Image 1 (cartoon, rainbow, N blue to C red):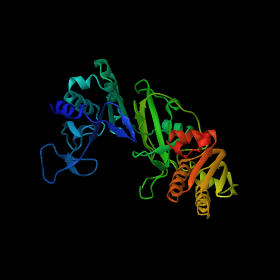
Image 2: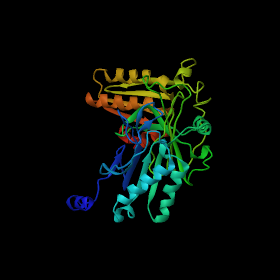
Image 3: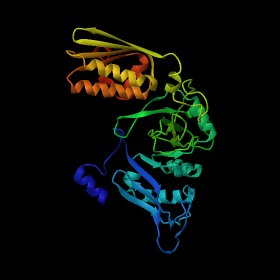
Image 4: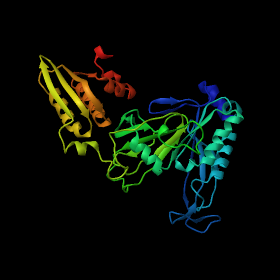
Amino acid sequence: MAWAQHAETRDRAFPQVSVAGQTVAGLVVDMDASIVLCHSEKESATRTWKKTFMYHPLFCFLDNTGEALSGLLREGRAGSNTTADHITVLDQALAQIPDEHRHGTPILIRSDSAGSSHGFLAHIRGLREQHLDIRFSVGAAITEPVRQAITAATGWVPALDTDWDLREHAEICEITGLLDAAGWPDGTQFIVRRERPHTAAGHAPGRSAARSREAARPPARMTRDGTHPPSQTTSTSAAAPSPRWPGSVGAQSRWTGYAASMRAPLWQHTVDRLGDTSTIMLSGELDLSADREVREAIIGELQRPGLTRLLIDMQAVTFIDSTVTATLVYTSNAAHKSDRQFTISPSQRVRRIVELTGLSYLLDPADR
């Protein structure tokens, strides 16, 4: 009835969910467990792995409307990834969705790694036999084969956050073809994210995590220095090895910039000034080690009296990471605030990154 009233007043049964500026078609169903502390003895309240006394209920919510579809009250000692409980709660949630939407609308099931058991994912895939257009996006633990795949992966591109902004020091990559997917539903994709851990995160070296998915591509993550990578599973394609991140996911996988600082620079820049126009020519590999100097060079030139146009010539750039990409966005905004024109002329590698991250507006008109 509520959905019918919503459709009548708003011309559609439910609002659409947006992720990173992109609309997710259909219904998005989120599953997660919670803890409910008990301060006195209550029926079914038990001690947990957190050394607390509580309940450990499992819930299912519809992200489109924010409503709770189902829940299962469980003892505190109930497992986080119990397949039977996840199946029960999901089936009860789906039964709450009106037939015309349950069978005629794409449905995405999202969960953290607690929802990545092979039995639960097989159940989701089996629901397609009931004519449901359903898929999943779940977290997954990083095993040694996943670590090896992350180390070998290439094709990393800058990551975006949920506001469609660049996520600083973060990149994503698909590793589907680099590890054995036995036990996962056919067509599952594996996507990982690597990033520099926050200094307050308290991650222990060598720890890691993973994520997997079957539809939309939520990123899994791995810290660039190998401390706490998550990964994600989906259902689709592949990737191959990267010479930029050699070594194990532990101590050997250090920031490229640190190693670069110990040897000859991997990049260069020159400045050409003509009247009210300046051109900064960059070449080589622009990674973390180059970021500070690139930013200082651009900001310094923007402060030149009489400047009206600044062109960043990147035709000779062979590699650019998310740090320098974020610097381009930052300096572009600074230029526009001071009424100066800011454009870049990219190499094919840089153009691919710019287009993937939605930054085509930075391109010089001659290169669009």
